[in-house]
Length: 341
Image 1 (cartoon, rainbow, N blue to C red):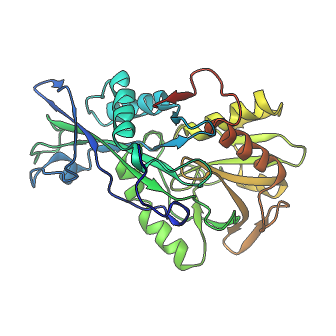
Image 2: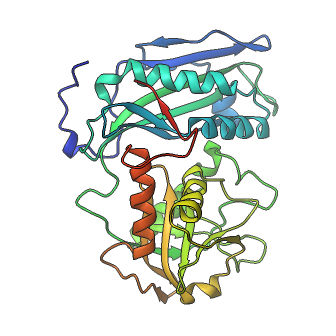
């Protein structure tokens, strides 16, 4: 299929409307068969559950053109499982996991002309989401829901090259113990907006959220897990029941162990330890790893030896290995890559 006339090299990380999206509705206790549509408009009642009580969950993943010309997605089964867990936590009917993966494949295939070519640095970002649609005025779960998937081509997260981030320790809490921090719910991101806007106003790229119970342990940022490298080369990721189980972070942990032979620890990480770390990164779908050069704790600067100009050596190896797997340059573990075309 002929590609759309898009300047792939100058795409930003924003929404570009594509030709098709997938829609399925839940009513009377079951999901309908679902369909692709060219209509990007969502029409719901003014009293819809999603508008009144934020009953919505979502996912994010990408489709890539590999070195050998195939269009693939990366571990969509894990996105399906996480959406199911998120939906169940908000008393929403889970969209069947096998149908989720199929909906992703249908959406990507229908928008093949928007999948950026290999080597452009761009990818097709895919957003599946689920929300309550029928009128709800009392505080209770909706009875009817809609599951949708749209796709949009996006440019590389680091336009013009990697720039290590400067982040601050936030005075706000991201999630409560036993709350919803471990699911991908829209409400978690809504509460982070004020904190990120104020961080940007003060010249920081992101917030580091501490555990709300003791405010001594590292949790995550508004949209990414942390990954640290110790001075003796060990990879360490924070363990907490109130952070999102990042698919990228889980994949990087596997890559660190199985591809690079590194020692990995998932454990509680204390803010007081960060001065002894050699490297720091943020893990997520958008950038895979965003290097962090400096963390500022109320005026006290914690500067990582990896510096403010490029990724640290271990972080860079992790990044290159995982993106190599995603783009088909390296052999993937079984089940990680779903070939669409």
